[in-house]
Length: 234
Image (cartoon, rainbow, N blue to C red; front, side):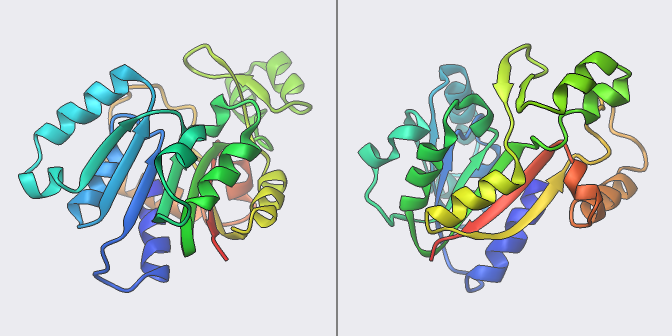
């Protein structure tokens, strides 16, 4: 779902066929990085978890040489991008599933925006702080749901204490760093309670169509588990 949304934003901002310079901060096992490299973009991935780096390198090793040459992996923290790169070095910067682990996200987001060339796209995927009561409420965990209304802190499925971001707050942050919000989507509107490793349903195309529509439509996208925000560097 996020990939479709990202492709839509890229297609709307850059000429068809242009090879983009992409920075993927918190690249994980490299899913997005490899996908973008396969369509011709030059991708630099930053990751600090050795296990994820090993998985990304293993996945990359199975790709043709032309794709391998388009991917660079750097071990590091997303907060030190200024050490590795000059300002304006990238056309697209991704930061998906990272901000929830950062206690003070504003400096990180500002640093990412500085990496963008004018007109560049900043793509953030965050936990929706305005909908933290949804998951425990749907599970019938009323005490946790009630407490979730007044906080942006939560415990994720890995048992880690992390934080969420509110749409209004991030919109103000993006405006303040010169990469104002251009578009936003909801992600996992109806599927957030699906168990990890659940079997793919037979009507998966219908499921994806519903999620795609809901992720673009109020009021549904406002109660999605995740928010996908796209800012554009002025």
